[in-house]
Length: 545
Image 1 (cartoon, one colour):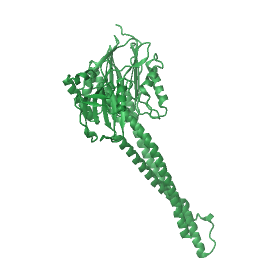
Image 2 (tube, rainbow, N blue to C red):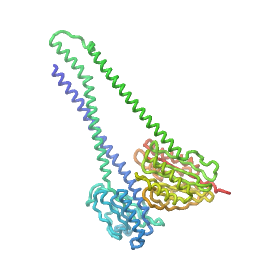
Image 3 (tube, helix red, strand yellow):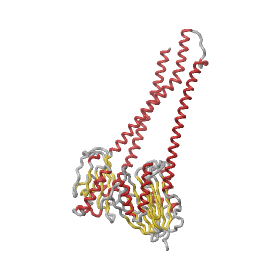
Image 4 (cartoon, rainbow, N blue to C red):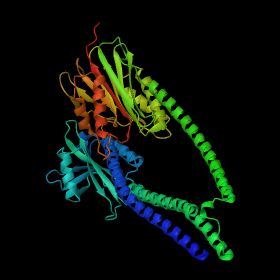
């Protein structure tokens, strides 16, 4: 009888545990498959956007007005300097190739090389740099169509993925952006080739983690079920077995199972309860300690949030006695603290500085770099120099001590209140949106300079806008157009412009509220991925006196 019960006990435990493990394995496979495709698509989209921004930034280094002169052997000093900067950028960004080509627009079947930077160490490649003027046939119809789309201005950029090794080339992404001259004509194409091994490595690591977690979960649940089966099934059957053995030896009627809770059983139960109580006390103590630590961290983060908020102008209207303009701004970090910032301040009685910036990275490191950048920017601007000179000084100050090689994009404008003249410079930041009086908001595609902190010795260019009473200027960070919904769709610049034009005559505060409501309606319950920072300034009247 005892052997039969023992075999039955083992078989039941094995069947229950085996069934649960099988369910967990199937669940793990399903979750891995779903997660793999979702993770791969999200990573690929992020790779596409980030590579485009890298290529777009690199295009700033090339003068589109001198492409033909380069091919004719002119502008040699400028050509050498541009080639050097492209080569430095290629190595710093860890990309395999950066090359600029002029395409034969008769059939887009041929092109000639202008610049060619190679870093074979990035992906164990064996590319040979093309010389200036090297001619080559277009690889295939896919490239031909994308060249034509860029020259015809049908797209801001084009992307080609090669996910398999072909002709000795490792998997890579090639992003193409147009090089334009001063008349906005496309004179060449900049191509950036970036290895995509990170995508495969990330997805491989993702699958390994899922497999590991599934295995650990199966082990933990198996142990838990084994203990549970022993307590709920095995022990009662063992007691029944002891009573059956006693009955076989003594052949007398024993106590009913209603009295199975004897003194010894109560003692064991009492001991179990005591153990449970000890475990529960330890658990509560551990939970209390963990809660206290979490509260401490939360308190410190709340303090950091208040400090960062206090660093930004947050009282509106900021200049109650000034009727010539109206300003409103907001910054909503993705985490407790963020890396975006806005600022506005009076340089003197007739000059107002406006700035919006976006620091690389997120969280506390970005917040610290943000505070430093804000202080440096304001200090440089208060010297009374132009917007371009201010950004140049700011870049020199940050590059001098930047061991983590962080960078910040900045749009800076200085408004001469008495005339409405706005002098601005852009260091790799988003295009501003401008609305003329009685008109609609439109993107103002200004010339981008290099990011602040990215490279020493950079010089920045500035431009002028004449504002008339009623004109509005809207500044923002990439967290607005790149806000994503649950399906990883971008809010986009077009939707932002539509939100601005919902009520273009509204006050700056209402305009920001309209944009934020549009973003919230679009992303719904999706987690905020990046900081959302916006600033709107309305020029109301010229200063008199």
